[in-house]
Image (cartoon, rainbow, N blue to C red; front, side):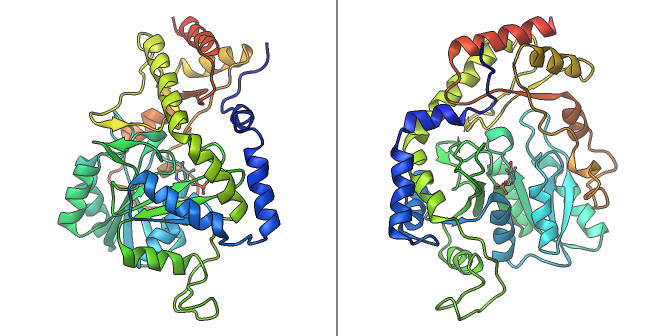
Length: 375
Ligand SMILES: *Cc1c(COP(=O)(O)O)cnc(C)c1O
């Protein structure tokens, strides 16, 4: 039996056939490699898909976070509240603009920022002598965070709410798609994300015309009326036209892929709910299912991964160390001495293969292997 892929990009390529090759060839023929017509078309389609007024593409999901922070003038002397249980880029972007990330614990149910802890985060920022400026909520594994509660708090405290939707593009809350759930949303098109390109890519979403205009300037060296008129310090952070051409083809089949992802998740939950803690969607949420992540007792996890690996079933640990314990980040302030949920999750989570092309029979094999290993 052939090895099982954690994410099967080859199956997706086969489905798209030579559409991808033709899309790339068209760009090579017209030669507008930077901000070519496919970039404009993609931005229009991303905005239409999400329901946000503006979509602005950029070089990757980390730059998208940096650009969001820059667009609101967040920098030295300011604090940004972030979850500790996330990918490093969430906090890295804050440090890159000279601000200070304040680590908060996450909720036990959805692994996202716990809105009830925001006041503790604010207090920690003020104890450190910093001005609280923003909150970055992460939609971990594809499920949108609690934006109604987060927005209410941020509005009352005059904080910018940034949605790090690198894993959740395609998800929704109460019928509103990711991209419209916060004043500014960032995402990533890294190949393994739910909507991925064939290299690095990213995008931002906002309804605010002025913010969108600042983002377009910031991603292009802070350009003003033209590229040799520089009105602010920016970055070189554009999405390649070739990547935009590939994303246009993939966006076309993305809705059906989201449906297929959700079906895989449902089958896992039906098969595994009795032997492990399975992901729970909060009311009104649709997840993009970037990951299907189980929680198992910490002392069972190494054995489970080893047993599955011996049967050709790959697993991944997202994330084995919370950021407040990482060498590069441990000196930053946190809301309290201990962040118990983040610590527990890092020793208990394990993600299973999930992609739109995972055949039911293969899934049943994975389910059987997990059940055998845990019972
Ligand atoms: C992938 C990811 C990013 C960074 O995206 P890149 O395109 O790899 O720079 C940021 N935040 C989260 C939560 C991610 O999963």
